[in-house]
Image (cartoon, rainbow, N blue to C red; front, side, top):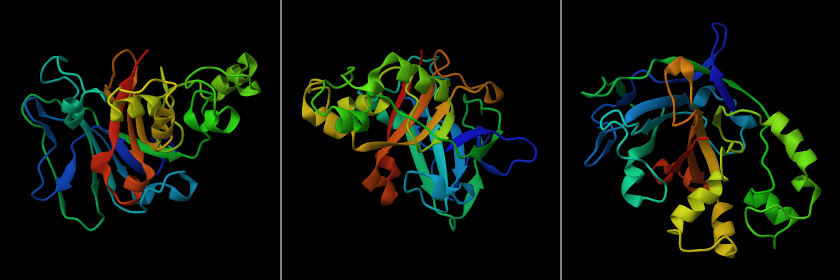
Length: 256
């Protein structure tokens, strides 16, 4: 599901930036020792065409996305999937539709991003040969991340695929548009503490268990720039998504 800046006639499904509305009495997410997280986006699940999604997102409630964006320390501390101590620097919160909420102002030192409404558009996403699901079907014994002897690895096919997936985007569900290595593999390596090699079947199995929850591109309209025109990614296991265990979502980011 692609998310794009809404025009005046679009039905909004959420927004980038602005101020978050949290449950009454709830605290804004904080990375201990570093400070509060910046508010990135909110998504109203009830407004999404959930029947078109490939993930089991709930039909009501709101997702709130927060990230330690470096405003408080001039970018000194980085949130990295492989660094367990930094994982508190990226959070996804879920609020049920019947919860009482109130808008929260920005903490001292954090400048809110401009509020930009988002509209949803059903759009096909694609992956490529490096993705664990592709490799499992076409070449389960091939080295993870490498090309193998199959037409989907041909340059002609990859060029055609690039015409479909030629740019980053804001997105809910679908296949992530990885700027560098497949984000599922990055998450799997982090979960396994970097202790397995790429030819170890445990890495492929772990990578195959994660799906994209949300992806947020750099966005001029919201004054958001992630590294060198990169993107933020949150991935989750399907079983955790079904149980609304969004605190178990994993984060990574990539830029060119």
